[in-house]
Length: 256
Ligand code: 1SD
Ligand code: ZN
Image 1: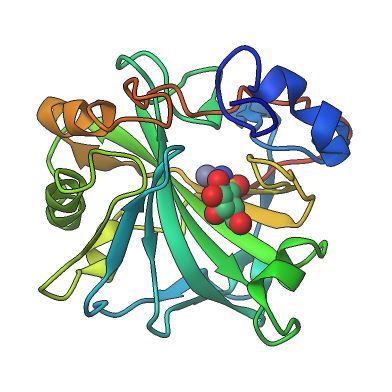
Image 2: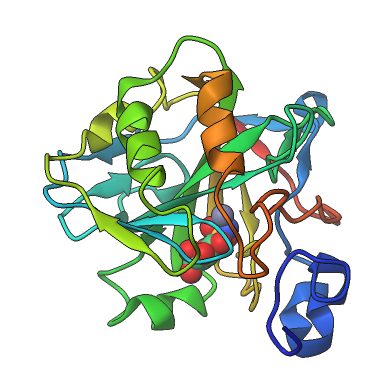
């Protein structure tokens, strides 16, 4: 409906800047990652994800994506975050209507069928997530590409939950603990990192992006499950990705 953002022509990425001026900024996400133009860096500390199983994880179809809210204590640190620790708040996905597109970041102009975002905030520095989301060092999002291949067991738990939230505005609480560590690719120390933004309105320029080079596997059926969710218009919820934005004078660093 009018006044709310979405992914249609009339409320989608090309018009977000009308209501959310930050969307026209110089530090926007996603971007294309041209691997040949990245700067190899050796960080002082390895990137570390301190994740543990999440009891009673709450999942919702909010009409724009599938979001899981995390209540437990899970952190990332190291890599571009150095000694700072950022706390996991939630994760969600972006996907396409077919396998040729759907991810937000592209790598050498190649899109993946879906991209997982694990959203963390700088909880030692800011009092609330909302405050962090508007601050330039407030958030760090770990992006992981989904690729058709060897299925990821943790993702299976997610896709099973997805079957229960096909209608927008519905939620589901998992009865068994969710294997959060199992969601990550084998080696998270292969990544690209750059300063960027939320890829959704208000597009705050607050995110240290960490995009994993290793993918996680999913099946064709699991991608169909994503595409069978319904959006607020009661259509299939698909193509909920923002196209790539100009890199401008930013440098993308590559772990080394
Ligand atoms: O799309 C998400 C949005 O749902 C929210 O989680 C936000 C953080 O407040 O992050 C964006 S994104 O940039 O991770 N796509
Ligand atoms: Zn996202």
